[in-house]
Image 1 (cartoon, rainbow over the protein chains, first blue to last red):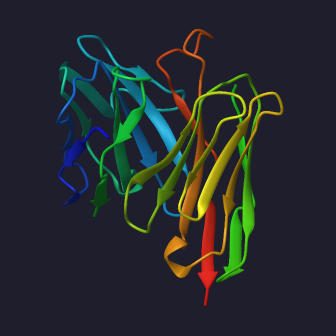
Image 2 (image 1 turned 90 degrees about the vertical axis):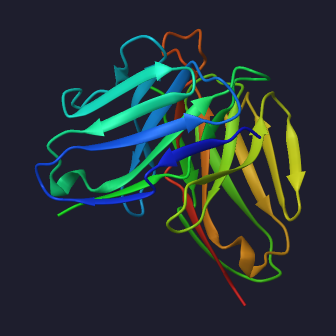
Length: 116
Length: 116
């Protein structure tokens, strides 16, 4: 299957700082990427859909000014958590849709964010 | 709004036993995915089911899809400890339904513990 990477895998930051998470499709072009958030022992919650060259579509209840998404190229989407607070601590997972075949989503390894 | 229900949410089973996890969903869809998640890790794709009646098997796991009943099952045969993990089903929105973008809606997950 296709490979998706995320960087960093783990980040600890102080409250009030901003954190950028990168999601890359390594061996395919992804016009659509997705950002999910997962709390401990919970399921994945879709935060936003990121389309290359256009604004992201955010799910209801997700603050677009807090979670900035940029999909500047066909292989890279970034999620920036601005002015992070402890309640933003979570596991963030991206996925990228591979248009070859049947549009399956491939998931990155996730980023564990801890805000102190 | 697409709803996906998994049951059971917790499953403790002895090695060597068989069991089935159920995934029900609320709207028309022909595409369903099963994933495995180990603690602290991202999702590992297990099965992609793309049509009514689809059945796929890999090792001790077998998944099936009945789109008319809006039901998928993940059957575990002769469980072994290595199968202990959380299993998620995810249903893909029909991209032409208005939801667009091939979004996935996840079930809450089934935490499987296989006891020696």
